[in-house]
Each structure stands twice: as C-alpha cells, then as structure tokens.
Image 1 (cartoon, one colour):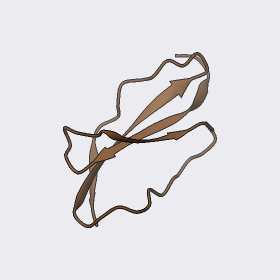
Image 2 (tube, helix red, strand yellow):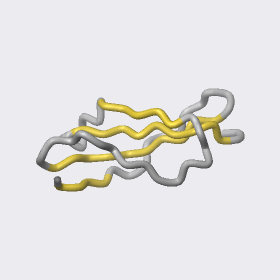
Image 3 (cartoon, one colour):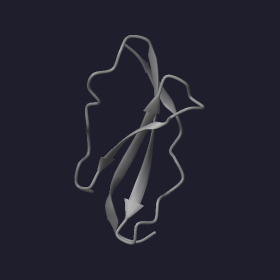
Length: 66
C-alpha cells in the first residue's frame, strides 16, 4: 500500500455481517463517532484506503454495547 487516502469503518450488529460502512476521505482523521446506533451490541472494523484506491484487510473486529 502507498500513501494513505482515508479509512472505511465497517459495522453491524453481528461480527460476521459488517455491511454498514462509513468512508472517511481524510487520512489525518484519528477518531470518529458513529451516531444513530440503536441499542444492543455493535461490531466494528476499520480498513485503510491508499491513494491508488487499494483497500487493506479489515482490522480485528471490536464490539461496543449501547
């Protein structure tokens, strides 16, 4: 991978179905708050996107209960 362009946050209510995404097209962003989540357990992973559009493998999945 080359220089970073941004990130993709993948999330959902199952660790095996992270079908919802948020794309951040600014590599300098170091935190982001996902809003409008319903109650329950949510699972998240992050991928890096470089300037050529190449996407990394997803990070380890983490969870948060709302």
